[in-house]
Length: 469
Image 1 (cartoon, rainbow, N blue to C red):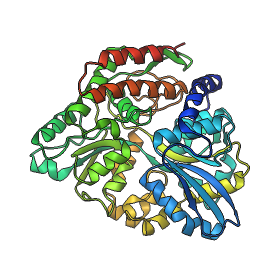
Image 2: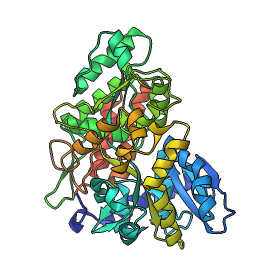
Image 3: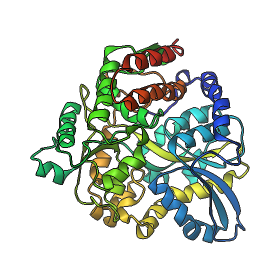
Image 4: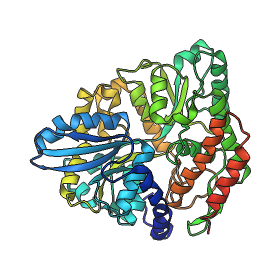
């Protein structure tokens, strides 16, 4: 899984695919000094900034909101380093950080990225390698970090990011609701079975059957849908022998079957206003008891079992549903990387080393509102040896199993182009194609029927075919 085959990465295509969208992104996002959306003015102070300051862009989710609150007391107070956080929803984070690092911007010293971006951005020279720092920092303890995650953040032998938390995907479901309704969740459910459960629960009228990501974006709606697509035997593109992008497969029957299934389930047994929900919204609905099932990242379980959750102790966890494949759970790690343009690389590593350390994880368990269940999961062996965590995390072993079973090298039934990936196609072009197509799919979801499905598939196929070689 280490990304060492230069033939499978194309920096020129990456620049063409991404830079083509930057002008639009820049106009939508405003100036570099004031990115659109999110919390753009959060400063973690405590030591007066005598040790300097860093500008850090992070995704808007509970674990990252926790570290923002804890940085002053756990990091700044000792180091004197002021951390200026920019907190953005997932789509905006990707747009703004990609624009900044790809155009030699200097807005951020540290950016939060994942397994899709790290090897590609690293190869393009947009990130500073952290190979030596990670290997030589005894406090960070590289041997404690799960090797597959490190491999996914590596290109050509260089590590480009340190994982803050890692995840696969699985199905969360209300065990009490299933018991009350006489339903039995299989140990390894199929999507057909989940569809039946969701519709029966929806028909009962007390809550929504399932929550699925509806917000357009390759990493939002596109992530969940692509795992469904994989297990239905479809894919976005065929792969040429050299790993480059082959013919678009969007017009194939398997793609249509998967998309129609996903949209119908979302419309007919999903939550109200599905185009407004992604990870945070689904988690809130599940925590508040408004939905019976939720398919998403394994990291979601942390919030469901947190001390402020109405459903703690009432959730069951089973592998990602399948159709024709054995497994379908994804693999991801929200990770911290150093922009190549940063003039504070040593300071940036010091912060990253602390933020992604076992020390931070252990300290957070005592301090965060959600308690031990809500600490960053999936990155370190030591996390799963913590008795306090094990006592409140029934999802711990299912998470590890899901990550181990993630079909990273063959997520569907046919080879894919680019670097290994499950919920994404590991080529730069996928960002643009995934965003375009999920906007079209979102129009169908929002319509409440399937009348526009043919047009959406046709538009998506034509767009994806532009990148075929």
